[in-house]
Amino acid sequence: MPDLATINGVAEDDIATYNGTTATDVTGIGGATWQHTTYTTATGGTITTSGDYKIHKFTSSGTFSVSIVGNTSGDEDCEYLIVAGGGGAGEENNTGGWSTGGGGAGGMLTGTGVNLSVADYAVVVGAGGAHDAQGATSSALSLSATGGGEGEDAGGTGCGTGGSGGGMNDHTGGGGLCAGVGGQGNSGGYANCSGYAGAGGGGKGAVGANASCSGWTSVGGAGGAGSANSITGGSITYAGGGGGGGYNNAGAGGSGGGGAAVTTGTGASGTANLGGGGGGCRWGHSGGSGGSGVVILKYKFQ
Image (tube, rainbow, N blue to C red; front, top):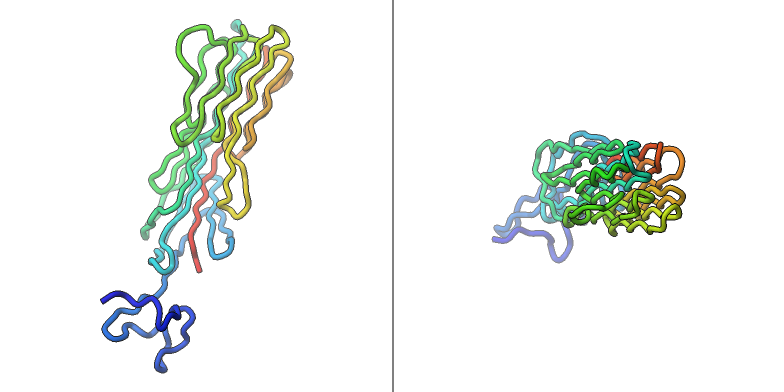
Protein backbone atom coordinates (compact mmCIF):
# COMPACT_ATOMS: atom_id res chain seq x y z
CA MET A 1 0.00 0.00 0.00
CA PRO A 2 1.28 3.53 -0.69
CA ASP A 3 2.14 5.84 2.18
CA LEU A 4 -0.48 8.45 3.11
CA ALA A 5 0.70 12.06 2.79
CA THR A 6 -2.77 13.62 3.24
CA ILE A 7 -6.27 12.79 4.47
CA ASN A 8 -8.95 14.17 2.15
CA GLY A 9 -6.33 16.49 0.71
CA VAL A 10 -5.21 17.86 4.09
CA ALA A 11 -1.55 17.39 5.09
CA GLU A 12 -0.55 15.85 8.43
CA ASP A 13 0.85 19.11 9.79
CA ASP A 14 -2.59 20.73 9.35
CA ILE A 15 -4.60 17.92 11.03
CA ALA A 16 -5.09 18.14 14.80
CA THR A 17 -6.96 14.87 15.23
CA TYR A 18 -8.34 12.02 13.14
CA ASN A 19 -11.40 10.25 14.58
CA GLY A 20 -10.40 11.66 17.96
CA THR A 21 -6.76 10.56 17.72
CA THR A 22 -3.97 13.14 17.56
CA ALA A 23 -2.51 13.14 14.07
CA THR A 24 1.04 12.43 15.25
CA ASP A 25 -0.26 9.27 16.99
CA VAL A 26 -1.90 7.86 13.88
CA THR A 27 0.30 5.11 12.40
CA GLY A 28 -1.96 3.85 9.63
CA ILE A 29 -5.37 4.22 7.99
CA GLY A 30 -7.13 1.43 6.10
CA GLY A 31 -3.92 -0.61 5.90
CA ALA A 32 -1.83 2.27 4.53
CA THR A 33 1.06 3.70 6.57
CA TRP A 34 0.73 7.32 7.60
CA GLN A 35 3.64 9.31 6.17
CA HIS A 36 4.75 11.65 8.95
CA THR A 37 6.72 14.69 7.84
CA THR A 38 10.34 14.77 9.05
CA TYR A 39 12.72 17.69 8.59
CA THR A 40 16.49 17.74 8.61
CA THR A 41 18.27 18.78 11.82
CA ALA A 42 21.96 19.69 11.86
CA THR A 43 24.63 21.78 13.60
CA GLY A 44 27.85 23.46 12.53
CA GLY A 45 29.09 26.83 11.29
CA THR A 46 27.10 30.04 11.76
CA ILE A 47 23.40 29.21 11.44
CA THR A 48 20.75 31.60 10.10
CA THR A 49 17.30 31.13 8.57
CA SER A 50 15.61 32.39 5.43
CA GLY A 51 11.94 31.51 5.13
CA ASP A 52 11.56 27.75 5.64
CA TYR A 53 15.28 27.11 5.16
CA LYS A 54 18.21 26.87 7.54
CA ILE A 55 21.62 28.08 6.35
CA HIS A 56 24.99 26.95 7.74
CA LYS A 57 27.86 29.26 6.80
CA PHE A 58 31.45 28.09 7.34
CA THR A 59 34.12 30.80 7.15
CA SER A 60 36.70 28.41 8.59
CA SER A 61 36.98 24.63 8.62
CA GLY A 62 34.61 22.70 10.86
CA THR A 63 32.02 19.90 11.01
CA PHE A 64 28.48 19.75 9.63
CA SER A 65 26.73 17.28 11.95
CA VAL A 66 23.40 15.85 10.75
CA SER A 67 21.32 14.20 13.48
CA ILE A 68 18.00 13.83 11.61
CA VAL A 69 17.45 13.54 7.85
CA GLY A 70 14.23 14.86 6.35
CA ASN A 71 11.98 12.52 4.41
CA THR A 72 10.34 13.22 1.05
CA SER A 73 7.58 15.26 2.67
CA GLY A 74 10.10 17.34 4.61
CA ASP A 75 12.58 17.64 1.69
CA GLU A 76 15.76 15.65 2.29
CA ASP A 77 17.87 17.60 -0.23
CA CYS A 78 20.71 19.97 0.63
CA GLU A 79 21.80 23.00 -1.43
CA TYR A 80 25.45 24.02 -1.40
CA LEU A 81 27.92 26.77 -2.28
CA ILE A 82 31.62 25.88 -2.07
CA VAL A 83 34.30 28.47 -2.89
CA ALA A 84 38.02 27.76 -2.67
CA GLY A 85 40.76 30.18 -1.68
CA GLY A 86 41.90 32.66 -4.33
CA GLY A 87 45.39 32.59 -5.83
CA GLY A 88 48.02 35.17 -4.97
CA ALA A 89 49.30 37.63 -7.56
CA GLY A 90 52.76 37.24 -9.01
CA GLU A 91 55.77 38.50 -7.06
CA GLU A 92 58.01 41.28 -8.38
CA ASN A 93 61.40 39.65 -7.83
CA ASN A 94 63.66 42.20 -9.55
CA THR A 95 64.94 39.67 -12.07
CA GLY A 96 64.01 41.33 -15.31
CA GLY A 97 60.34 42.25 -15.28
CA TRP A 98 58.22 45.23 -14.34
CA SER A 99 54.67 44.14 -13.42
CA THR A 100 52.94 40.94 -12.36
CA GLY A 101 49.81 39.01 -13.31
CA GLY A 102 46.74 38.94 -11.07
CA GLY A 103 45.76 35.87 -9.08
CA GLY A 104 42.95 33.60 -10.23
CA ALA A 105 39.76 33.27 -8.19
CA GLY A 106 39.11 30.17 -6.16
CA GLY A 107 36.96 27.55 -7.84
CA MET A 108 33.23 27.89 -7.17
CA LEU A 109 30.71 25.04 -7.04
CA THR A 110 26.94 25.39 -6.58
CA GLY A 111 24.05 22.97 -6.74
CA THR A 112 21.06 21.31 -5.11
CA GLY A 113 19.84 17.81 -4.54
CA VAL A 114 22.58 16.33 -2.32
CA ASN A 115 20.96 13.62 -0.18
CA LEU A 116 22.20 13.78 3.40
CA SER A 117 22.72 10.96 5.89
CA VAL A 118 22.93 10.99 9.66
CA ALA A 119 26.65 11.65 9.86
CA ASP A 120 29.41 14.14 10.67
CA TYR A 121 30.63 15.79 7.48
CA ALA A 122 34.06 17.43 7.46
CA VAL A 123 33.99 20.96 6.01
CA VAL A 124 37.26 22.46 4.76
CA VAL A 125 37.51 26.17 3.95
CA GLY A 126 40.56 26.91 1.82
CA ALA A 127 42.95 29.74 2.68
CA GLY A 128 43.94 32.30 0.08
CA GLY A 129 47.36 31.86 -1.49
CA ALA A 130 50.22 34.18 -0.54
CA HIS A 131 51.75 36.17 -3.41
CA ASP A 132 53.05 33.76 -6.02
CA ALA A 133 51.11 30.82 -4.52
CA GLN A 134 47.96 28.88 -5.37
CA GLY A 135 44.90 29.11 -3.14
CA ALA A 136 43.83 26.11 -1.06
CA THR A 137 40.98 23.69 -1.79
CA SER A 138 37.57 23.98 -0.08
CA SER A 139 35.41 20.88 0.32
CA ALA A 140 32.20 19.50 1.82
CA LEU A 141 29.72 16.66 1.13
CA SER A 142 32.34 14.82 -1.00
CA LEU A 143 32.62 17.86 -3.32
CA SER A 144 35.85 19.84 -3.79
CA ALA A 145 36.55 23.28 -5.28
CA THR A 146 40.13 23.89 -6.49
CA GLY A 147 42.17 26.84 -5.25
CA GLY A 148 42.85 29.72 -7.64
CA GLY A 149 46.04 29.77 -9.70
CA GLU A 150 48.84 32.22 -8.92
CA GLY A 151 49.63 35.16 -11.18
CA GLU A 152 52.88 35.17 -13.12
CA ASP A 153 55.99 36.72 -11.58
CA ALA A 154 57.64 39.76 -13.08
CA GLY A 155 60.53 37.47 -13.92
CA GLY A 156 58.27 35.49 -16.26
CA THR A 157 58.29 32.26 -14.23
CA GLY A 158 54.79 31.28 -15.31
CA CYS A 159 51.25 31.70 -14.05
CA GLY A 160 49.33 28.89 -12.40
CA THR A 161 46.27 26.86 -13.31
CA GLY A 162 43.55 26.42 -10.68
CA GLY A 163 39.85 26.91 -10.01
CA SER A 164 40.41 29.99 -12.15
CA GLY A 165 43.79 30.54 -13.77
CA GLY A 166 46.28 33.26 -12.88
CA GLY A 167 47.13 36.09 -15.25
CA MET A 168 50.27 36.18 -17.42
CA ASN A 169 53.06 38.72 -17.15
CA ASP A 170 55.31 38.41 -20.19
CA HIS A 171 54.42 35.62 -22.60
CA THR A 172 57.52 35.00 -24.64
CA GLY A 173 57.47 31.23 -25.06
CA GLY A 174 55.02 28.51 -26.06
CA GLY A 175 51.98 27.34 -24.18
CA GLY A 176 48.51 28.69 -23.71
CA LEU A 177 46.68 30.65 -21.06
CA CYS A 178 46.67 29.44 -17.48
CA ALA A 179 43.41 27.54 -17.42
CA GLY A 180 40.61 27.24 -14.91
CA VAL A 181 38.84 24.02 -13.92
CA GLY A 182 35.77 23.33 -16.05
CA GLY A 183 32.59 24.27 -14.21
CA GLN A 184 34.55 26.07 -11.44
CA GLY A 185 36.19 29.06 -13.11
CA ASN A 186 37.89 30.59 -16.14
CA SER A 187 41.34 31.19 -17.57
CA GLY A 188 43.60 34.08 -16.70
CA GLY A 189 44.38 36.70 -19.35
CA TYR A 190 47.23 37.08 -21.84
CA ALA A 191 50.12 39.53 -21.65
CA ASN A 192 53.15 40.16 -23.86
CA CYS A 193 54.08 43.70 -22.90
CA SER A 194 57.82 43.15 -22.24
CA GLY A 195 56.96 43.18 -18.54
CA TYR A 196 55.29 46.62 -18.48
CA ALA A 197 51.89 45.15 -17.58
CA GLY A 198 50.36 41.87 -16.46
CA ALA A 199 47.03 40.24 -17.30
CA GLY A 200 44.08 39.80 -14.97
CA GLY A 201 43.35 36.54 -13.17
CA GLY A 202 40.29 34.57 -14.18
CA GLY A 203 37.00 34.67 -12.27
CA LYS A 204 34.06 32.33 -11.98
CA GLY A 205 32.00 34.48 -14.37
CA ALA A 206 34.60 35.57 -16.94
CA VAL A 207 38.18 35.15 -18.14
CA GLY A 208 40.80 37.61 -16.94
CA ALA A 209 41.30 40.57 -19.27
CA ASN A 210 44.42 40.75 -21.43
CA ALA A 211 47.01 43.45 -20.79
CA SER A 212 47.00 46.38 -23.23
CA CYS A 213 50.54 46.84 -24.47
CA SER A 214 52.01 50.26 -25.28
CA GLY A 215 55.37 50.55 -23.57
CA TRP A 216 55.40 52.67 -20.42
CA THR A 217 51.69 53.36 -20.76
CA SER A 218 50.70 49.67 -20.98
CA VAL A 219 47.59 48.86 -18.93
CA GLY A 220 47.21 45.85 -16.66
CA GLY A 221 44.24 43.61 -17.42
CA ALA A 222 41.22 43.65 -15.13
CA GLY A 223 40.40 40.56 -13.13
CA GLY A 224 37.62 38.34 -14.46
CA ALA A 225 34.16 38.92 -12.98
CA GLY A 226 32.84 36.63 -10.28
CA SER A 227 29.40 35.03 -10.09
CA ALA A 228 26.37 36.06 -8.02
CA ASN A 229 24.59 33.56 -5.78
CA SER A 230 21.56 33.90 -3.47
CA ILE A 231 21.90 30.85 -1.21
CA THR A 232 21.91 33.09 1.89
CA GLY A 233 18.71 34.85 0.86
CA GLY A 234 20.37 37.90 -0.71
CA SER A 235 22.54 38.10 -3.81
CA ILE A 236 26.31 38.05 -3.13
CA THR A 237 29.03 37.86 -5.80
CA TYR A 238 31.92 35.46 -5.22
CA ALA A 239 35.15 34.40 -6.92
CA GLY A 240 36.46 37.46 -8.79
CA GLY A 241 39.92 37.50 -10.36
CA GLY A 242 42.77 39.79 -9.29
CA GLY A 243 43.81 42.71 -11.48
CA GLY A 244 47.06 42.63 -13.44
CA GLY A 245 49.86 44.99 -12.43
CA GLY A 246 50.99 47.90 -14.60
CA TYR A 247 54.01 50.18 -14.41
CA ASN A 248 51.78 53.24 -14.69
CA ASN A 249 48.27 51.77 -15.21
CA ALA A 250 47.12 48.91 -12.99
CA GLY A 251 44.16 46.59 -13.60
CA ALA A 252 40.98 46.63 -11.50
CA GLY A 253 39.92 43.64 -9.44
CA GLY A 254 37.00 41.56 -10.70
CA SER A 255 33.60 41.80 -9.01
CA GLY A 256 33.33 39.17 -6.30
CA GLY A 257 36.31 40.08 -4.15
CA GLY A 258 39.12 40.29 -6.70
CA GLY A 259 42.00 42.45 -5.47
CA ALA A 260 42.98 45.52 -7.48
CA ALA A 261 46.51 45.85 -8.79
CA VAL A 262 48.66 48.85 -7.88
CA THR A 263 51.46 50.95 -9.37
CA THR A 264 52.99 51.63 -5.93
CA GLY A 265 52.90 49.51 -2.78
CA THR A 266 51.45 46.04 -2.31
CA GLY A 267 48.64 44.79 -4.53
CA ALA A 268 45.26 44.50 -2.83
CA SER A 269 44.41 41.10 -1.40
CA GLY A 270 41.29 39.23 -2.46
CA THR A 271 38.34 39.64 -0.10
CA ALA A 272 38.16 37.12 2.74
CA ASN A 273 35.46 34.45 2.36
CA LEU A 274 34.71 35.45 -1.23
CA GLY A 275 37.63 33.58 -2.80
CA GLY A 276 38.95 36.51 -4.84
CA GLY A 277 42.39 36.53 -6.47
CA GLY A 278 45.15 38.88 -5.32
CA GLY A 279 45.99 42.07 -7.20
CA GLY A 280 49.27 42.48 -9.10
CA CYS A 281 52.02 45.03 -8.58
CA ARG A 282 54.92 46.77 -10.37
CA TRP A 283 58.69 46.68 -9.99
CA GLY A 284 59.98 46.84 -6.42
CA HIS A 285 56.68 45.95 -4.74
CA SER A 286 54.70 42.85 -3.80
CA GLY A 287 51.62 41.16 -5.20
CA GLY A 288 48.48 40.75 -3.09
CA SER A 289 47.34 37.52 -1.46
CA GLY A 290 44.21 35.63 -2.44
CA GLY A 291 41.07 35.79 -0.31
CA SER A 292 39.93 32.79 1.73
CA GLY A 293 37.00 30.66 0.57
CA VAL A 294 33.65 29.80 2.13
CA VAL A 295 31.23 26.85 2.39
CA ILE A 296 27.47 27.41 2.75
CA LEU A 297 24.89 24.61 3.14
CA LYS A 298 21.10 25.05 3.09
CA TYR A 299 18.13 22.76 3.74
CA LYS A 300 14.43 22.92 4.62
CA PHE A 301 13.76 22.79 8.35
CA GLN A 302 10.01 23.48 8.64
